[in-house]
Length: 53
Image (cartoon, one colour):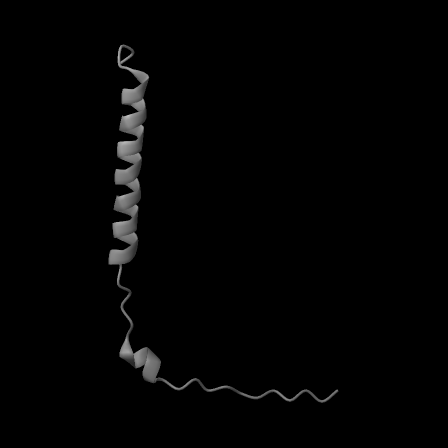
């Protein structure tokens, strides 16, 4: 509202900014990627390519 004091706008901006940053941090650190064990147990077959120049 226009009749609110500027310090109130500043405190609301800081308050919502902190909430936004905390929400993003929680979403970032709560994510746990699933690693499949079958993928890690596979051997990668590499074909050596010896170039004859």
